[in-house]
Length: 529
Picture 1 (cartoon, helix red, strand yellow):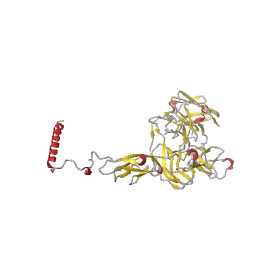
Picture 2 (cartoon, one colour; picture 1 turned 180 degrees about the vertical axis):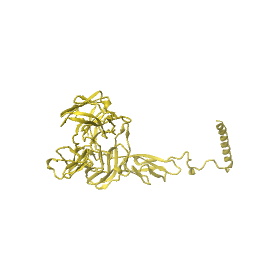
Picture 3 (cartoon, rainbow, N blue to C red; picture 1 turned 120 degrees about the vertical axis):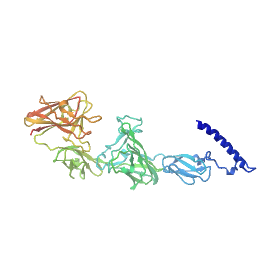
Picture 4 (cartoon, rainbow, N blue to C red; picture 1 turned 135 degrees about the vertical axis):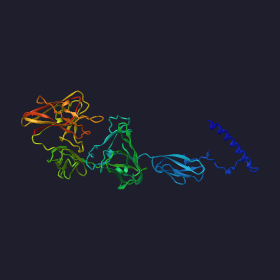
């Protein structure tokens, strides 16, 4: 504060002295001001350039122009975004794309002048719902089924994956449908006509969750000519519970629309993109959709088949349909011949795609079971008496091993039961037949209960599972432990329980679980060595 008090009087005195010296040094007869014709605005008070639009027109349709004027000659014109509106060196603005833009006028010695313009689209000539308007093609035949297997419902404005999502509805707008689940080689084709050849804008309403550069995951062609999408990038939209979808408009730009048009989207990789609508803006042209060609669904006698490792089973197509082809999703699990003969390679689950040009393809689920071991008896966990009907104990769920696309290791080649959120005691009763009486080794394939956080503890069978065979208690070995599986459908472990006495004919195995519930795949009874 002392320095400030000293400095201010000195500064004032200096200014007064300076003014006096200046006045004394002026020639006689001259005043302190310059002629008006030579005056220049000071840097602190520059004259601001005023910009106006002819007719005060500040809203343009795409393709329209407007002349801008400045109250100072010789200004330099510049657009904040030439992709929305461009401006030439005379101030003529051309509307290019939907959006808002600022046009500025600058000149040395003057403060910049600006004007805001809004570029709008005309009323759309046509809006196509891609769920029904597009001809769907799936490279692996997985989701091109009639009705769109991956057609999902969305709420306009927030767009959860399903209308009744656990995230809840965030908008009162009516539900819409959209399509997704695209993989490499998948295509969406839309055909439409126009009453005349015209330059028009195509706008795609699409959704995504993670950030993506569009050209890296898809290509777009109009009438066989590639559409430039190099500059289109979609941002990520993380939600409170992971990634949530967000839909918006993506312009494909002003394109040459012909009398007859084919717009094709081809996906170069698996992607999280979802397509909703295509909107066409084409001036006064009349635009109409060319309906996708009607297709019939390939039908098979059985949509699910089982086969043992090393053995074969045949896919039967209804109506003796000729010209079909077959492809296995996972040849490490099962292969298929050009006649539809499936060979089991390794235990697991996969799918065989049945295709024919001009028809919707179909998939046949193939479950490959391990080759039987001589003398071994397999008891599927989900075959418990209480699980055979529609009613299951609360919290007991049957889950398919391997998932829809195969790839996960399974032990029984079938499903397993996962107990989650149950309370109290659960009793599972199994009936099985033995060809002869004798001692057999009882083991189980399964996994420890899944943990919601942290590392799951092993499941010690002796401590947590009650076992009876034909009414007699079975005491589990101290080493009988099930390890935790890595995620749903992950690898399970096998644990030897004890040697048990099996009777010839029907046997009854009773399993009692309480408080701690493992996932169970199969019980095995094997001859002791």
